[in-house]
Length: 109
Image (cartoon, rainbow, N blue to C red; front, side, top):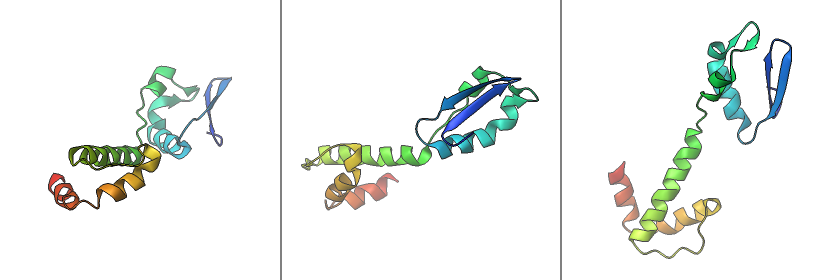
């Protein structure tokens, strides 16, 4: 890796690929899987590289919580002024004011 680029080499051929998204997540994933996808010549094969799952569990958790808040708002007919993942904090603040929010949230976990 070089900054926001992934440099893939095999023997003397190298390809520079732009990383779109979370660069540190790609770095961590590659470091964990590097021994299984390289040999003395470089990358064993693109198929092996493509098969490596890159999952941002923290982002996944944030999205799940946001969806839970939206479902809660629908179920309890809470009016939301704006909807969108960029407004997830605002949505959470509005739905958490409901008297049943903490009760339901605690029982679901």
